[in-house]
Each structure stands twice: as C-alpha cells, then as structure tokens.
Length: 461
Image (cartoon, rainbow, N blue to C red; front, side, top):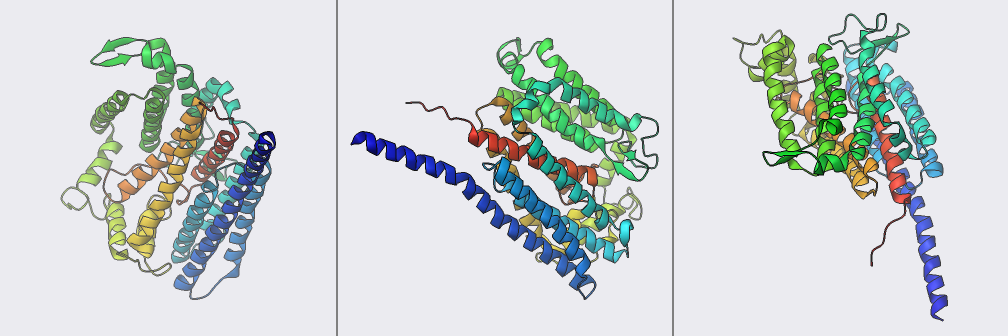
C-alpha cells in the first residue's frame, strides 16, 4: 500500500514539474501582451499630442516588431521553456518606450524617412530581436562558452581595435569608437566587446578562483594572488582600457572596469577587492583629469554647470542645463507625451533621453522606468545566484551588473550626480550597436536561467 502511495506521489510531482515551464511561458505571454499594449499606447499618445492625429503606419511598424517579440516567445516555449518569464517583457517595454520618445523628437524636428532616428531604431530593434532569437536557438547549453574563454578574450581585444583599422573608422565621430559597415551603417564594436570580455572574465576567474582566494602573499590583511593567476586577466583589462582611453571613450572604460571588479568580488567573496577597485578609480580619475583634456572638460561642466564665469551657458554647459530644465519642466506628472519640448536639448534622442522622458512623463514616469530596470537587474542576479555552476553565476551577475552600472552612469550624469560619460541608456536610447548588445544580454540570461532550472539539484539529508 505504501509503495502505491509513493508511486502516486512521484507521478504527481512529475506532472507538476511538467506544468511549471508552461506556467512560466504563460506568465511571459500575458506580460508581453501588456508590454506591447503600453508601447502602442505610448506611440498613439505621442501622435495625438504632437500631431493631433493618428498615423497608422508607425503603429503598423510597431505591430511588426511585436510579431518578432512573440516569435521569440514561441522559440522559448520550444527550446527554453524554463527560462525566466520577466526578462523579455521588461526589455520589450523599455525598448517600446524608447522608440516612442525617439519618434516624438523626430516629429518635433520634422525628420522623416530614413533620416528619422526612430526609423533607424525600428530597424535596429528588428535586427536585435532576430539576433536574440538566433542566439537562443544556437546556444543550447551556455556552458559551452566556458571552453572558449581565451578566444572570447582575444575577440574582445580585436573588436576594440577595429576602429583603428584604415577604412573602417568613422572620421567625424566625437570618439574613435565607431566603424563604418559598407559606408552607410555605423556600428560601435565596443558594445560587443564588453560581452566577449564578460565571458572571458567569467571563464578565467572560475579557473583561477582557488588560487585567487588562498594562494599568494599576504600583505595589509589581503592575500595578494600570484602574477601567473591574476596576470593574464590584468593584461587583457589594461590593454582594453588603454585602447579605450586612446579612443576617447571614457564610458566604456568605466563600464568594463566596474564589471571586472564586480565579477572579481563575486568570484572571491572578498570586500577588499572592491576597496582596491574604488582606490584605483580615484587614482585613475585624478590622473585622467590632469592628463586628458576631454575628461577635465567633463568635470568642469559637471562642477560649474550653472556658473557662467567658468562654463559658457551657450556652449559646453548648454546640454546639461537644458536637460535639467526639461526635468524641472516635467515636474511630478509631466507635460504628457507629445506635449513637451524635449528637442531643445542636444542629443535628446540618445545621451539625454532620460530628461526627454522625464519632461513628458514626469518624476512618476522616471521612477516607473527605474523600477523596471531594478526588476530586470534583480532577475539577472537571481538567475546567477540560483545556479550551481560558478561560470553561469559569474556571467549572469556580471552582465546584470553591467546594465545596472550603465543605468547609474547615465541617469547620474544627466541629473548632475556624477560627470556625464559617453554611454547610452540600455534599451531606451537611440543606438543600434547598444540595442543589439543589450538584447544579446537578454538572450544569454534566458539561456542561463533555462539551464539553471533544468540542472539537477543536490539534496542533503
């Protein structure tokens, strides 16, 4: 009798386990439907506020992108049914809100056709979703990436070097980080380089974790690892930063450095590495402000943004001032989509898209967007912490921290909390290379979460 009861219990548990993936995907379906509805509503409100009429063409194009999003959802049902159900809907909603605001700025500037930034953003969104679908299908087991640790490190360096190749570099760019593809499409290879370097850091730190924590010379209360353990990863990191500094791309340099320190802390569990990283940041900032004129200029604009005796309000300080004025104009509830003047701020569609959204959605809207980022990042960290293999844990947490640091740098920069650096706000801002990289991060997190839930659990007792 007891044997039969045990068998029935086992069958019930097996059936529950089979229904769980379907429940996850059903939850994702409804959240995706909600995200697409909100994105469509944002586009409609932009048209009503700025044009006073509805143009069905932009809604048709947005509907086409919704088809791609649900295509990703169907692929997940087939090949990764255990994947996290919140990551794709959040990324979809953020991307949709970004397209709506970029479209609103295009209307204000009378940009149409391929000259409109929203047209380019729609095209890059389609490419990004196609890339995410392809990665989810091709990468059946994320642990395969661990085998190619050093190849990804080499690929990251090569991608950072591409802007120096004659014929590829975009000559009139503010920073030497862009390459021209076919003479009509500009791409920033550093966005893909950070993904390659994240995989390299995760793989290498897993291989040298024990040596980093227990072997070495103890000095000032810290066990310093031997050069042969920490040396290779430090060489790749220093080469990456050297290339970035020479390219005048301070933002990517800070991003890669922060990602490296965060993953090092997760791998070793030692707070001392975070303190050392902060000390290196302080030294690096001091040296950069003394040696590099463009870094010194950013700090001057930050510290004296409203001092006309130091910063020209019609020159270097104009952008920061207008962004802050736009946020103040929006107030608590905003002017309404299509009803503000975000186009007054230079680069309102890219670097300053947060003030643009803040003006028309208000403080409440910005708070809701930051909450979306918070949930996205927390899900990524949760995916990493739930795993039983160190590589997946380091990679998921490293990628999630990259998004978190990028949001902090951009929101802090436009609100004058910290100096502004040349990055894009993930998913929201105009920028094809950034959008592709962020959706590839989504695909990697989906694959890791699916693998984590499928792996057997060790039961003690």
